[in-house]
Amino acid sequence: MLPRTGVTVDICPRDLPIALVGTAGGALALWANVPAEIAVPVALLIVLDIRIRRWRRPT
Image (tube, rainbow, N blue to C red; front, side, top):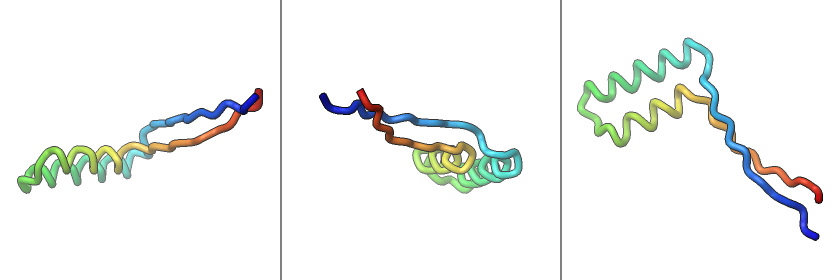
């Protein structure tokens, strides 16, 4: 038998000062007429701590 593999995606907010910087940067980008398709994902990557982990579980 083969071991099972999986992926875990953890999404949690960062500390408050970094979250405020990300929110302010996203708002400034939108105010400067940057397309929302670019500004919003970049702001979310700054505000959120996203970790993707691969794991292998023995059977």
